[in-house]
Image (cartoon, rainbow, N blue to C red; front, side, top):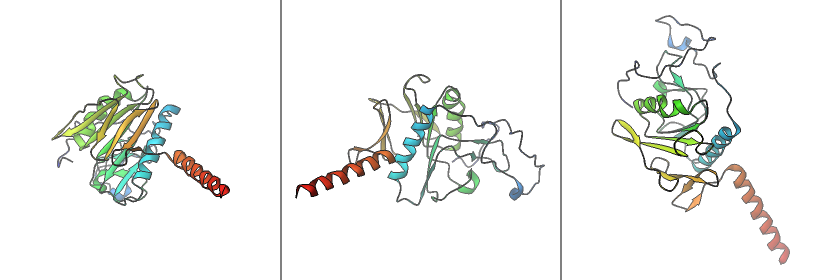
Length: 231
């Protein structure tokens, strides 16, 4: 993360009407950083399902890591004392950050900007995803940024856009054959079966969602019972 953040160039969201104004000099502990905002809006089932599936895959993959924090739609505040300098990535993955529950993510407390960020494009968000958020994530220090079109080409020029950091910039990364490798995650992001999956090149397998893992477990149990019955 850059040592000096020029907040004049950072994205500013309109303040919530319910926010309390704190005059200059107000003690930090008195400032409330809202967990929910009045300008939060609902999304489509395409959008929700993709976020839920990716989160389940990542949570299971990193379940034994205590030094990785990942979450979805959590408000991230990036300027201390400013409750209107915030955004809520669809998915963020922060390496080197303790894995415990939080109400919000305060950049000045964590001292780590999430290295990997996913946004799921929708009618309401896609313009911001490819413009202002890209610039903001670049400035704040994201290493990898992925924008996925949950409706597969309805909003973006391609089903998936990828950006990887090179020095101070987030530059377009090539998506070959509807898949791209994430160096930080150690996984491939793949457009497959009319959705997006995460593929582990070390095991040569796709990661499973919780529903898929439970279904596989039930299948194995049934197979064991079948073999027992044959004895």
